[in-house]
Amino acid sequence: MSLPDESWTRAQWEAMADRLLAAVAPYATDGFAQYRLPGKASRSGPESDGLEGYARTFLLAAFRIAGARGQVPPALIERYTGGLTAGTNPAHPYAWPALTDMSQQLVEAASIALALHETRPWLFDRLSPAERERVVDWLAGFVGKRTPDNNWVLFRVVVEQFLAEVGGPYEPDEITGGLDRIEDWYAGDGWYSDGKGKNFDYYCGWAMHLYPSLWARMAGDTARQELYAARLHRFLDQYQHFFAADGGPVHQGRSLTYRFATVAPLWLGALTGASPLPPGRTRRIAGRTLRHFAERGAPDGRGLLTLGWYDAFAPIAQSYSGPGSPYWASKAFLGLLLPPEHPAWTAPEEPAPVELADQALAMPAPGWLLHATRADGVVRLVNHGSDRDRVQDPDGDPDPHYLKLAYTSHTGPEVGEKAQGVDNHLAVVAPDGTASVRRFIEPLTVSDRFAASAYRDGPVRVVTASVVDGAAEIRIHRVTAPPGHRVRDGGHALAAPAPLDLREEASLARARRPDGLTSAVRALHGYTGTGLATAEGANAYGAHSATPYALAASHPGGTALYVSLVWLANTEPPAPDVRIEDGDLAVVTLPGGGTAAVRMADVPTCERRDTIS
Image (cartoon, rainbow, N blue to C red; front, side, top):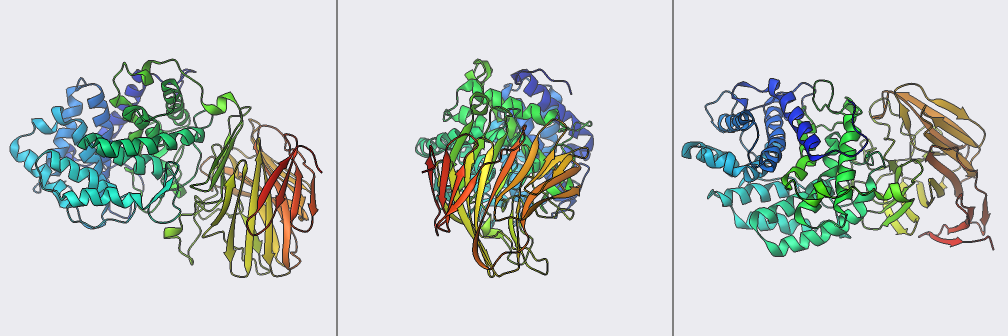
């Protein structure tokens, strides 16, 4: 798809919405109540998946209809009106499944309620009394139902608020209860955990901020809206850094198949007046993100969004993901609710932060350290806090979308049966080949260009400190383990459609894409060699992937330090000097000049120096 160099105009956003909506139409059941899209079924079954296809595309249609003040082709309104009346008619062969405890239907009810609220003058209010009553009856099934104790509590909030608007049954205590519940998960600085624990990911923006702010807009609750706006302001001040110069978002967390839904919080800031971004920057980042995916196969040649990142990639999906799940991406079109004359559509574009200068950002609330470089537009997120510990199974497989040491806008973790688990993980490998697992991360510190955390797995304890400088991450690991174990530190898994250029030396391993992007690990202290782990079909960014790593053949027993350079950039990696003092002080010459002295105590500290003293 050939696209202009500048970010997309409102007309181009509308055209993309129209393309997505037209592409799903052939998959509608009789009466348009369900959209049974091709692809892997979810654990919820075909009826729920069909409802999901309707609900999520209805949300897209709602933004398109409301944004145009109803001035859209009548067939679009008729199609979703027909689906609504058919789906809520128990006698219809494709009637929607009832709202039951903990069911996927509860998620989809929230999209339908939001869509009905936004399109009410052109859709709900034009239904017959009997049709409105059936819609209310179906949505009212949410009242009193149990949900998981995470972002799902907000689905109840918006559904019951819509019911309150139209005179349906609802429980005020359930609305306030959901809103009060998320206060327990607010970690500060604009960050929510998705439920109890350290569950930081894109749900913070596209759910934990989105639904309360839209609820306040529905309910007219100015006091809560001011609270949510202040938090959203702080969140967006950091979140704007999560997008590469070409629009690619950092690849971290679950539900990544929602793709450009990542820009929904940017539009939410503009819609609510909470954004710290210049309006031209909101449009530039959002437009470049939509363009980024459109140029790389999302939507595909049929106009469909598949389970994947760019093209279809099954391992990225969760068990709850079905063929209609990717249409959560509809939230990206929230900006269409802004009038055409809004500054977010009309103001001159302004560059994203990474286009202006190198960036380094400490985020203590989620335990993250972000560094981005202007020269290549790459954003790197160093993870010393988010592990989704609330749902980690000590006996199950670790979740690669949460437990890695780093994520970026240009690489993804190795996933699925073909993944080797080497990337962005400090593993202590026992003589029988069993590798330690970084699970239940213990955040220790996050400060200016420095962060640290620890994990324990049986007799193994690892304390890791990260110093970032430009494109470089210097990792210092304090490893406590039995003698004879191997120590392996993996870098970024680089992927491409074709095989990569690979190079392996005694102290350096690197993989390079044809465009020059290079992932490398340089062994600086404690390691005896390097290597490359290659795979096919294990990475969302391409069929062929490779992960460089540093390796110590035999840990001496007790506690020892290991230091490595982890690199992702369009240039070859530097070779900084390292010296160890007093057994626990690593003094590193930084690639950008000066030094960092890292004391690997129980809580590591870092002192940046202009010269080595």
